[in-house]
Length: 557
Image (cartoon, rainbow, N blue to C red; front, side, top):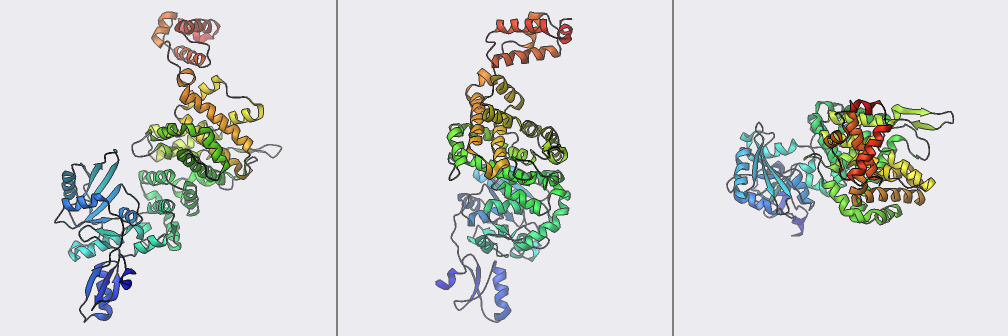
C-alpha cells in the first residue's frame, strides 16, 4: 500500500491497520507508539526494503539455525548501496569464537581466533577466483545482555562510529535494525557520528570518516567535522599501526588528494605526521604554479588520474591523458602486474607509491634557498626527503621492503625530470649507460619513479602544461619502460658472465671491495654493448686493473 512504502526499511506500530508510530528497531517503534497510545493494542512489524543479499548470508544462517545473529557495520551499508563487500561482520549475544568455528566447519573454510579477550573469531572463505571473504563473529561491544538481546544490540550499534555503519541486518527475519536512522543518512549521502563521544572514544575514526567520505562520495556533516577537529589531539593515543592502516587505505583509495586536504583542514597532521605541516605556504619558483603543499595535492590527484587512465586505456576528455594512453597503453597489462606484486601482505604497492608521492617534497621547506636573482631552490630535498619518509615509515612500522621502496622513489624522483629536460631542450635521448644506472639504482621502483615523474610534471605546471613538454616526458617514459620490459637482459639486467670466485682465480686477486667494483663495471659495459663474452669481460678487467688505483694493487696482494 502507498502509505507503507514511505516506511520501507523501518519498524512500524499499527493500530487496526493504521500506522501510528515508527522507529529503527521494534523497541523504538513500540516506545514511540506507547507514548500516546499506551492503552491500545499495538501491532509491531517490519516494512521490507529491496536490496541484494550476499549468498553467504544464507549459508551462515543455515549453519546456525538456532542462534540469534546479525550482520552489522560496513557490510550492511554496502548492501544497501548495492556494493559488494569482502568483509562481513556479525554481532552475536555471546560465543563469537565458538560460532565462527561452527560456521567454518559448515562452509569447509578456514578459521582463526581473532581476539580471544573480546570473543571474536574469523572465518576465511576462499572463492573459485582465489578471492577472500572474511566473516568475523564478535560478541556485542556494549550493552547488558540481561536487558534483552534487542536492547543490547541497539546499545552495540549506538557505540559504533558513524550512523551509516550502525545498522544491523537480522538474518532470521530479513529485517534491518536501524536505531540511528543510518539508512536515511545513506540515502542523503551524509556521514554523521553516532554520538558526541564517538570520535573521542576512538580518534582513528577521524581518518575512517574521511576515507568513507572519499570512497562513497558522501559529505561529512558539520557537527562531525567539528568533533573531528576537537578529537584530533587524541590521535597520538592511537597505536602507530592503526594510524598507518587507515592512512594507507586512504592513499590507495579514491580521491587521495581531497582526503589529504581534509586531514590538513581538520588539523590532523601536527598530531600524526607533523613534518607535512611545513609544506603549506612554502613558495616555489616557476615553472611551479603552486606552493609545495598545493603541488603535493595536485601530484596525488594527477597520479590517481594517470593510473586510472592506464587501467581503463582511456583518458576521457583530457588530451594529456589521451596522449598518455596512446604512448604507454601498450604496457597496460605490465602496469597491472607491477601493482599486483606485494611488498607486504596487508598493504599494496599502490599505497606505497602514493605514500612516496605524499612525501616526495616533504623537505623542500627545510632546504629552501633564494639566490641573488630571487629564484627559489631546494638543493638535496630529494636526499633529505628520503630520510624523513624513512623515519615516518619506521614509526608507522612499515616493512623493510616498503621503506626501501619509498626511499628509492623519493631519493631518485628528480632524475626523470632531468632526462625529460634533456630530450625537450637538447633532443638528447637517455643513453644506454644512463638507462642501466637508472634501473640499477631504482630496481622495481623504476616503474613507480616514471609514474610519479609524470604526475609530478602535471602537478608542477598544471594549467600551464604544454603538449610539447608533456610529449617529451611521455617519450622519456616510453624509452625507459621499453628497455625495462622489452630489453631487460640486454640493457637493464645483463646476464652475469663471471662471478667473484672466477675473477679472483683468473686474475689472481684477493677478496675485497675491488671484486664488487669489477663485477659492476662488467655489467655496465654489457649494458652499453661493449662486452658480450666471458673472454671480453676478463680482458676488460685486466685493462681496468692496469689503469686503476691503489685499490687494484691491494686486491692483488
